[in-house]
Length: 234
Image (cartoon, rainbow, N blue to C red; front, side, top):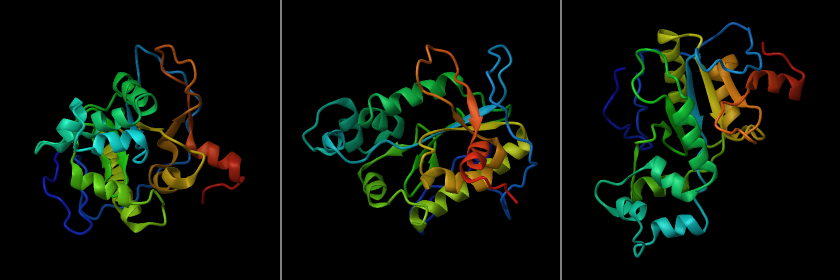
């Protein structure tokens, strides 16, 4: 997939490394909803994953940012090359984020013609980025200074733009591709921005417990919202 190799100067967030298109509009899909499905391991449908970010405060964040830290992730973080965000976030959240990344690597099945792994990390201020996206002190500062709040423009705008680009690319390559959110659906900090764009294709795992190396059952965020609000999408 083509990409735009420059950075947006306003707000200093990166263009997502899949195509942006002229006059990109929010995709409108049919109202058919995903059923709760156990995936056939011999014929897995196309699927990409969105991972919520690691906690950027606390003891492990202080360790990563310490100029005296000598472990590999910290040394890479301070270097001119920086550290891949997946490595940094796996250190910050050695159980939760590391587990999500391992799961996504195993089960991501992007459609034919997709460039990359089909895995993206939600980042405050930078939208969706691939696991190999480089994290350095300047970017970390922006991550920490951007509240994960849909009302905050610095967080909302890049995430919406990248979600729209993702929907556009899926529509071009394989319209039945699912997008699995590995992150909290209990609040609106992700769902409120992603669902209006991705709608019925946005799924979430029904449970993270006892996966045993097998793919989880998924349900649609849309059906969960219907149950919670009792309102139908217009």
